[in-house]
Length: 179
Image 1 (cartoon, rainbow, N blue to C red):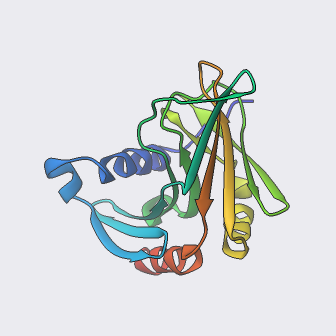
Image 2 (image 1 turned 90 degrees about the vertical axis):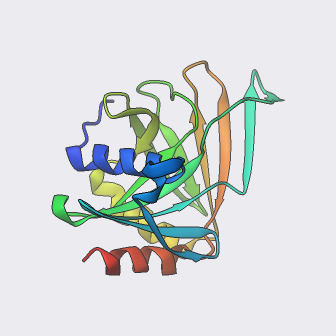
């Protein structure tokens, strides 16, 4: 299945990528607040707010066996981009090139969601279909952990667990800052 994303999503993905960079690029973004396991960031030009968290646990498997793999940044984000009409857009940064066209699975309690990569935007990111953004955020507000399962372009399965402690306060702060 192929998903096409707006330019606003690509801008947010690039900004999020800069968040954990070094030097002048990282200084362009302002961390407003750290709320338990989530951090709130703002960029003023263009106005973009987002929250971000890293996994509390990561496991990789190949051929049914647990393996050690090298990954770059692993993050989950919710972006608010008022200039693009984006009120809350979930995205997952896998830390490796995702298998094209393969769904990334996300479970929050009994709720299940699928996210999809779009290599034209960024080969390490996956997004929900825009129609599912609000439902995913609602489930994250109610949950305690989110488990994200992805498959790399090389066929390795990764399972990342994100704590949702502080999620509701962080997403509300980002939405307030980017009204």
